[in-house]
Image (cartoon, rainbow, N blue to C red; front, side, top):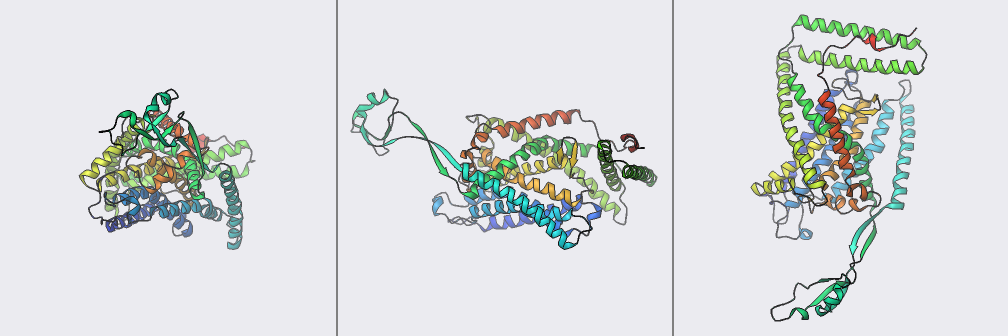
Length: 527
């Protein structure tokens, strides 16, 4: 492990760690509130407060879950190296905190968010009691289905299997080694043996095996740990796609945003011209909507309706961008300066993103994928940084973990919940309804345990001794039905494959253009 915190007491308690966690927690909360304000649809402003509270808390909890891992490392490092871990009085009860955040994650994903989504999307003609009743019925059915799956799986295959080598306890003389070697036996020499006045043949084995026999040790895992494992597997199915896309797409998209930034505020006449084009497109979309209302709801109608939804999304995006390049009001100049500073922040994020993505890919190739790691790589870097200053290694560790969450969220916002060519619940700046927020926040929450498990596997050397590593490194990796997925690195190879495909797509993707085609050309005319 790395160095110890300079502000830690001998028994391992560290007030500075608590202060840092409180400050970071409020920063994360502020960032999530800003994200909600930046993406929310104008129709949801000053209303839908309960869904907004759920979204902010859920998104904050997802990021807290990932950042709890660096806190776990700092908590272990706070204990002096000359004190046994079992005798150390730690700053934070990490095992209890991990159980709390995973249980809260489970409750939000499978209970509170579904209820809120059903309530938000209920028919506007329903009364409040009718909305609550309908939402409770749908949520209860969904929850019972999930509980049955988890309980049945736990009762049938909720075991860990550890490979063991059989050794027979006892004492045997080394003059029998020739006989034992004929049967491929092993011998463990006692550490206290004195070889100065004793011949080798007079030494004795403290334990020996007759045939190097390997057995499997099967144990029932606790229900909370099994639930955490199931959460991790479900999260991996989303994480490998969204993070695989985001690892390259995030820094490339940030760079394109910077390179395509407006050089100056457009003139008022240009603003009026573009606004008139948007108004004409809005009128055309309204005409198409009237035609769809009079048409028969067949396959052709559904295709036209999907195209109409895409055109509405494009129009809303153009309106949002137009308002940014022509800020109005008394604070227009201030808004323009902040707008431009945001692009330079994106340029820095792009540079940092390329560096972090390269480090992650190199670490996976050198440490995570080979059966015998070629190099500890980032683990060594964290230890060296801790030797320079006790908190540098933990801060760098937190940066790499947080970057995974950032690119996973970026991939989620870019892809959304897609079914083939149908995009449901999209995330668009300035045009995102609360239903989209709730669904995508649930997806981010599901990914959080997978990110923690991925970091535990990637930084097994640096994070050794932490509470969460005991769960993911010593139990989840040996669960029946799950261990083969991790042992053969199936998720890792799949994520790298997605990243390569995303890179190929981004290489051939053209630049974004502001002008859109005539929306009437996108539809088959309806008589």
